[in-house]
Length: 266
Ligand SMILES: C[S@@+](CC[C@H](N)C(=O)[O-])C[C@H]1O[C@@H](n2cnc3c(N)ncnc32)[C@H](O)[C@@H]1O
View 1 (cartoon, rainbow, N blue to C red):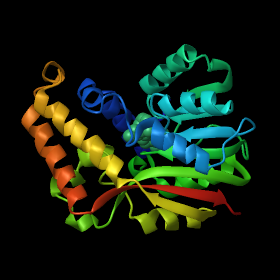
View 2 (tube, protein in one colour; view 1 turned 120 degrees about the horizontal axis):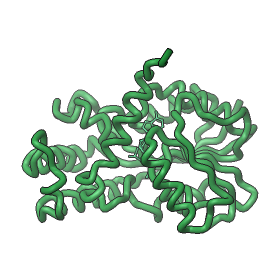
View 3 (cartoon, protein in one colour; view 1 turned 135 degrees about the vertical axis):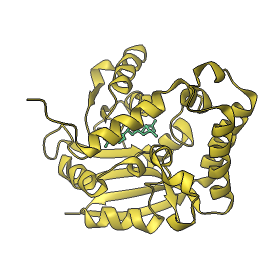
View 4 (cartoon, helix red, strand yellow; view 1 turned 180 degrees about the vertical axis):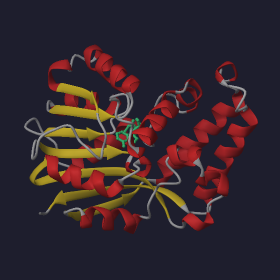
């Protein structure tokens, strides 16, 4: 008997399909989180990663950060993601970067992490907790696979007031595009605190979100070869309107991007 996918699986796969879509890849220039590897590196340094770290990348996407961290810190990195295509690209990337021996990428969901208890010394998730359907389950799973005093880094979209966002951003596109499911800054701290983590620090990186959205806007305005990848259900005007709504949220300071460092405390 085939077991039907859970809501988490359905939303996770939908999110992976969104980021794999040629239009989204072109608009984001293949970089799925604000700040690219420079911000990932800052997070890794704040997490004190080193060659003895065993690291988990939760919702690793196409492995851009995981392969970079494995190489830069000479450590072991495992990445899980809902998208099969993402995992295939991550494996190819690991080969190209010659880190196949120190990385492992597999399909997996944040709410049921396919690794044993206390397997990792550190974990991180970039621009992804905002997309998780069952955030509290994901946090408990993260705590389970981290060893005592394990370090956790989260880079994510923050939203001050959900009621203020445009209805269009509250739908499925807003959900997979990291807006509708984002928490407030205090909301993330509370979520991880309840899941057994103590909060070490928060830093604000909204300027990098703004740069990413501005770049996507410019690329959409220029066409950037997206026309041939557009379907009957979306055109450049729809995309520009959606990006415009996101830009408005950022300028009104309702939407931002923050880095959180936590440590497992129980
Ligand atoms: C915005 S992308 C970020 C990817 C990657 N972390 C990065 O920064 O490049 C969000 C990712 O979350 C993954 N995702 C969403 N829900 C998930 C879940 N419940 N479990 C695992 N992966 C999930 C999607 O497949 C997608 O790759």
